[in-house]
Amino acid sequence: MNYNELQDFIKTVAKSGATEVSIETDEIKLTIKAPPKGKAQPETIVQQVQIPAGVTAVAPQVVAAVAPAPVAEAPATAKEDENSKYIEIKAPMVGTFYRKPGPDKPTFVNVGDIIAEGQTICMLEAMKLFNEIEAEVTGKIVKVLVDDGTPVEFDQVLMLVDPS
Image 1 (cartoon, rainbow, N blue to C red):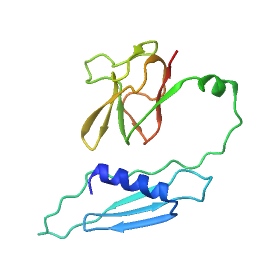
Image 2 (tube, rainbow, N blue to C red; image 1 turned 45 degrees about the vertical axis):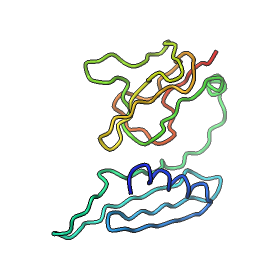
Image 3 (cartoon, helix red, strand yellow; image 1 turned 90 degrees about the vertical axis):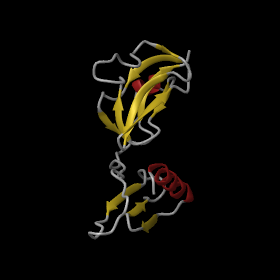
């Protein structure tokens, strides 16, 4: 099972409303447990299985993603209301967030920069593959919410953009 198939499977299970699904192959054991409706995100546990010597198999390098622990909802503040007018740019996958293409290169975008739809704004490294993330909106970068080199989760907000 490759990374994209794994992501599609997790999304399908989340949409189905099932509370628990398990799959086991020669390569991996996958269990997805979803809390009752209104609770935190589904929890995904992926376990590598040791393959006996002499057996040839290709196993995924990194395939673990666990949802964060539930957090009690805080009352809305003025700051949250202020941020609601901005468009959120979210991580399309689990990976490591990079603001620049290389250690000695300039950042893709900075706070205050005007971005155009289709412009590369950051990179996410997932399973040793670097994926350029392009803007889906045109606007001004208001805030970068993730530090360079930090792991991010699927659908985590990376940046806020003012579309006006």
